[in-house]
Image 1 (tube, one colour):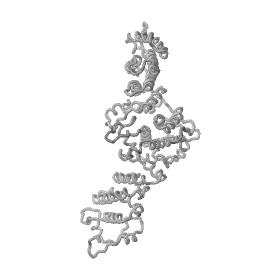
Image 2 (image 1 turned 30 degrees about the vertical axis):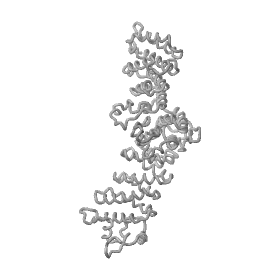
Image 3 (image 1 turned 120 degrees about the horizontal axis):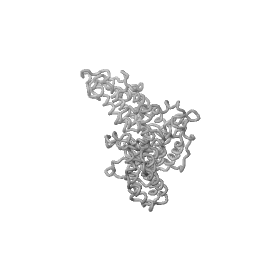
Image 4 (image 1 turned 120 degrees about the vertical axis):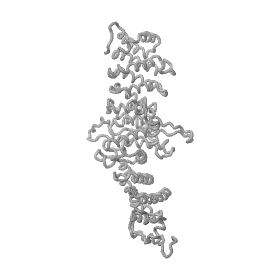
Length: 550
């Protein structure tokens, strides 16, 4: 049959009868002479100097056995054959690695073409998670895990995926993207822990601070993700969705088609993220709105402060400090169910969130500014274009600035908060509502920022306020529009605060009192009282003997 005289090759039926188990490396599994084996595989490794002939012989037999195995029995053969074969990629012998690659190439063609072939997910997962596994072997384990989890039952995915994510922050970017893609596919089935003691067993990747931070960042990206425009690929803009960079959008989308990240399918993924983020004490999932439900009820009672236990001794899976940006984004989503869930959870956590936290303030500034956030301005300018984040959607920025106005510490978080105020006032896509919040933040900064910071940046702040009072920030609005009147009211209040706290900034401008007195004749009633206050404070600045700072 194989072209070898006087050597009888067993038939496939005889080979199947000799199959005594799943092990591929039983020395007597096939009654073929070495000459026949070498003719089948087309190589004579016995003559290769330095080759590991014993191992090559086993691999050659494994290759032949896999090639002769029927598709219906391939799954049984691959457990534990596949993990064992992948493990040999760690060898330094080039001939062995070449043989392993030949076997895996053959398996890829057969497995990809037959979705009914189950893969040994548990052994592959253990091999991938083992720190001693060689990088090349780890990559191949992940390839087959991704292939096998796509055809596995939801219950099996919920068991296999969480341990894979342990240590994700220390893995390369390519592996991170694949692992997060697997997490996306199993979000709705993840087993929520019944208590913090069960966290290690059910969601071990949330016990490591670096892994936890990476997953939270990815969940925020998922909530900000918007579907690509429904246009031919050649016409699609390369600009990522608001709040994301091109790299972040690619990490969320993974290998999913455009149809899988739009409409109800995308909303379902965001609701699954809300399920994980909103898991309250005791591990019961927080109720989230379905596509058919018009409303949602937040479960678990009032949120506790960050890091503090609830009355029952168990805190929520994530603290309010960690999740407030997520709920803020979700509350602005275009899908009704996601938006309703986000609004309910935002109300629930707002009372227990420490808005004076510098980490939270920086997160809110990042939503407003994107990669232009002051905390990483130098790094952001040097980042590659694919890593530069856009500012979030206008609705998200509006709510973020509103929360900054409620934090006293935010007023002194320079230069990020000052940049956020100016972005809200003068960004090209700013709406009147966002500009109104920006003017309120400018007044908040003028009233509460530390005096040394006002002395250093007050001139820049004053110039922006005067642009608002003169109507230069809202050329498209009528002066009597409610938003325009509100903006001028905040600007006058900010001027009054600067007069009291940093009078030297205004003492040099002798024309400003005349300008404000002239505005009294035309100013709307809604802003006239703050204007009077600004004039009164300005009069004290220019009074004889006045000077210094309050």
